[in-house]
Length: 142
Image 1: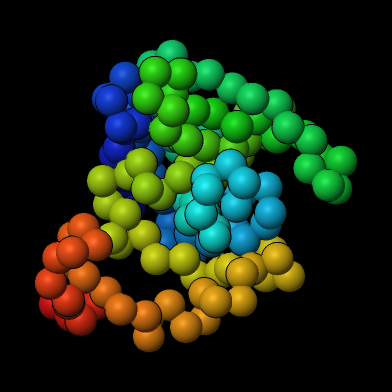
Image 2: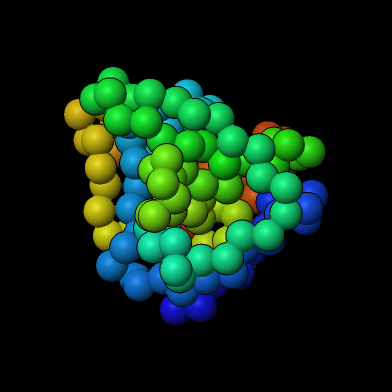
């Protein structure tokens, strides 16, 4: 599948090709801290299958395992774009930056040992159309 996307401000653009079986949700505590969310959905792409343009800022982190990863983000708007190995051979593109995010359904959840427990019941919570005072809606109905 061909994918396109950008950071929030548009300074960074992404084009690539992804296989549907390469979409994952990562529940590691690093992803939780970096995203400020309970997990991050990613599209895993070899470097040859993705083209990222713009001025990417990077942060080198060392995981609990000792593995180093580069975290790529927009220095202007702060959007997280990817994580990659130091050699930049394999990219984990953040699906939230991709225009096709509705179609990029995770087929695997990784680091389940650190997943927040409440995620299992997320569909049972109250849902509203937009902001907190907006009308209730039944999620996922088309």
